[in-house]
Image 1 (cartoon, rainbow, N blue to C red):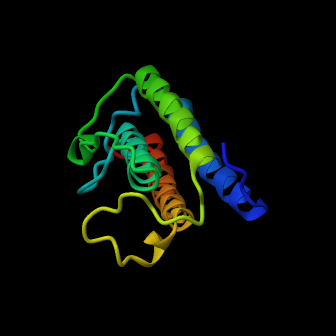
Image 2 (image 1 turned 30 degrees about the vertical axis):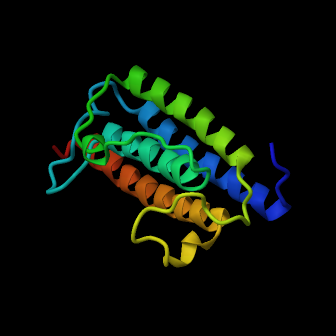
Length: 157
């Protein structure tokens, strides 16, 4: 485990809190809604958003930052349909793996394995920058999930 500076510890805490908020929204939905897509073009179900966040976070934290390849089928993330309990168990396991990745990350180091075409991205200069990108994605998808939840609870199908 690496020792992180106070600002790096704040980033780690924010990352885990945002992911926990995503998990909590899905855990609180009525059983029939987590796999329901809102009736809007391109809408994703809450489970699809969760599965996508799981794949995204490990790709950046492990494959990119640490150089430990994690298989991912991004397209399948957006067609996923799982029982809520199974999706939450998966998310809990992935969260633990993500936290372990974060503990091993040397924040100011260069990422070990940047995806082709991403070498010049401003955030990709350090592992901390990569994790700030993950935080950005979590915030985007958390907002997306909150809107999706509200539509589904309002009966918009």
